[in-house]
Image (cartoon, rainbow, N blue to C red):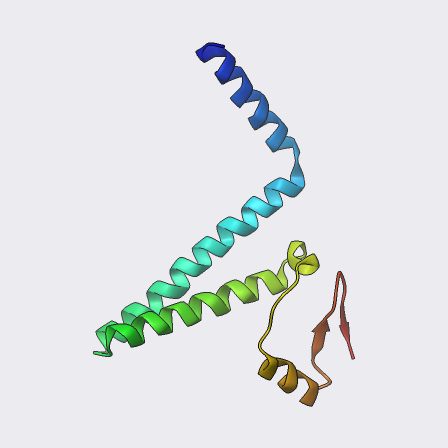
Length: 112
């Protein structure tokens, strides 16, 4: 198999990927998550460093912001509704104290 054979395979793969809408949606979600994480990390980390906070504090603030940004992105995405989400026990306890909030329990979000 020569270079032309590999080129044809890549072109055919690209054409199939272009037709697959679900794959495109997942790739778009992954790209959005990556950009959200980078921006969510850089802004608070840079601000904390400029404010004279320690490096560990700045990195922690950046990672927390990036994590919350990605979580919000996935909770809003219809693709991620079928994914399982591990949540700390304290968050579950707090959500039981506020029964009027939205509960995401599968493909459909429902109000209690």
